[in-house]
Image (cartoon, rainbow, N blue to C red; front, top):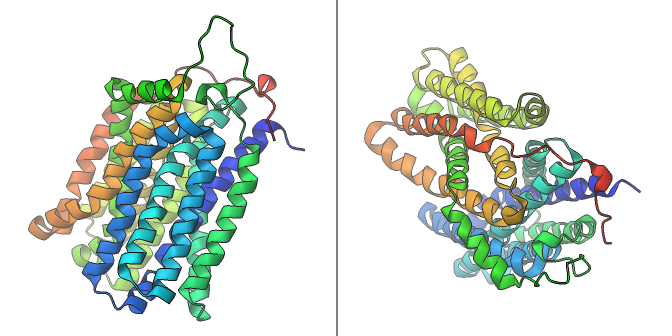
Length: 413
């Protein structure tokens, strides 16, 4: 049997992977859902808003769930909500044929996604502290691998004519079964209030979940949390803007073909993945602050190269640097937020909410700016936020050395 800390790590890896899997599975079938419901582009945007709104609610609810349910039950509850929603999307598109039904189902998917995102980041940060290595970038790389798997499976299902309903139902079952197995290796932890056997001094009063929740909300007054949020905001904005606008900026801003624009986006995603795969060892060797500053510098240079590129090769080089620069902000921000183990869940939740604002507000904001000033000029906003992220990098400095796994508590199975 693997060491409990390694089993814990692998369980979190699995949670990140299935989160990416169900996200990409829905995205891959958006055209089929649109065609099945005969929706316009604006109506598809309305459906996607349902998922975004659910995600925000999930982020807000995550602190309450952790305080009330603990990590294991919070993750399983969140995944169950998302799986029900994913299956509901298939039912709404294939059987009920109702856009309103699909909207509600996507809200459930978003609710589960937002809440589990916080919990699995809290657990990931705790696991990497116990193991003594920086693992959060690799965990986020697992999410990326899950999206690749989901996209490929979605493309395959579409190619063989598999109905959306059956496809998403199968994915929902796989996700739920995987989560049910994985959470068995997540330990009960006293600081989350989910370990009834945790020793407590006789004179020490029990802390209720309401008191934990009240303490969780106080983290919004912590300047260090807000500064870490600036790091995550800037780099998440750089990531989200590329996901939504990079291909179009290459086509409309630089006159490339649609195919070349798609290739540019593929280069960005590949650079992001590479950055997250190699980021952990670099952080362990040089520390968070130098690596974050280097990422910010790479991102700034890459954005300038992309915006001003007079030649194709410089555009691609800028895209690579942009991807590398944006790759570590979110995972490192989650690790830094979780350094204070007493309020790890609340701090991660607060930073995640700030980061998700970039994903939710960024695309439409860049669209408005692009309409008035041109899409390439709109990207200067991303550059400014990347500069702010680099300046805020010291807020992510490690608070303490990692603990050894020798004193790791046995996992309750």
